[in-house]
Amino acid sequence: MTDYHVHVGWYSNGYHSPCEIWSAVQDAGIDDIVVSSTSTCAELYKLVVKEIRELLRLGGSRIHPLLWLTPRMFHTNCRWALPYFLHSGIKWQGVKLHWRAHREWYYNRRLLHNALEVARWLEVPVLMHTGEFEECHANVFKEVCLSYNDLIFVLAHGRPLDETIDVLSSCSNTWVDTAFMPATEVKQLVELGFCNRILFGTDAPINQLFYKNINTTDYLRSCISEMQKVLSKEQFETIANNKLYR
Image (tube, rainbow, N blue to C red; front, side, top):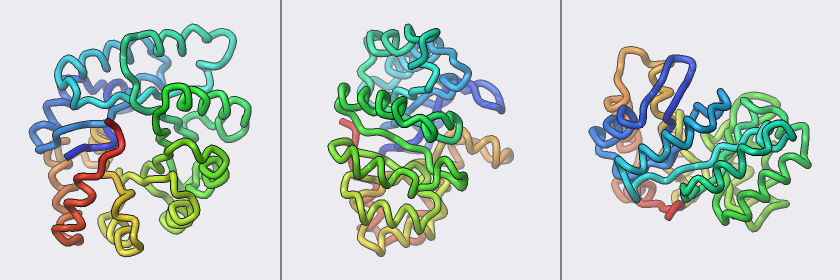
C-alpha cells in the first residue's frame, strides 16, 4: 500500500527526520510513500535534497519524491535553486504546488506556466493543495487542468468536496488524494464512480499538529481502519492498489 501524501522536514511543530517518517509508515504497514519536504517552505533547499537522499537510502525504490516548487525559485535572486534540484541526482517523480502557502501561483499565471513547464519537462504528475480558501478551492484548478490536459493533476485533500466532484467529472486527467478527508467523503467519491482515481493519503506527520495524543503510526492505522469501515473489501483494495507514480 502507498501513502500518496507524506512530508519530511521542518514544520510549525518542529523537525521530522527521514528516519522518523520512514519508521512510522513502515510500522503502520505502508509499503511506499510519495513524499515532499516541508523544509521547502523555509527555503532550506540544500536540506531538502539531503532529506530526500536519506529517505532514498532508507527506502530505495519505495520512496517517490515530489519536487515542491515555490515562486521564489523562479525569481532572479534565487534562480540557482531549481537547477540545483534538477541536477541533484534525485529522480523527481512529481511536482507539488501549494497555492495557499505560496499565493503567487494564483495571481501570477506566467509564473504558474513556468512551473507547469517543469512538470512537462520531467513528464510527471502535479500535486495541487486544495482547501477552504480563495486561492485553492478545487474549482480554482478546473481551468488549469483543462488547459494543461497533457499533465496529470492530483487534488490533495479534495476540498470542497462538491467542487472536487465537479473537477473530477470535467477533467479526466485529475485524481484526488484522501489526506485529511473524512471516510464518509471517500465513500461518496466511490459511489460516484471515482474509485480508480482515488489515492490513499494521510498528510503524515502533520497529524501531530492536530492530534497531539496519537502518534503517527497509530494515526496511519486509524486512517486505514476508517476507510475499511465504510467501503467494501473490493472498493478498499482498488484504492489501496491504485498506482500513479512508478
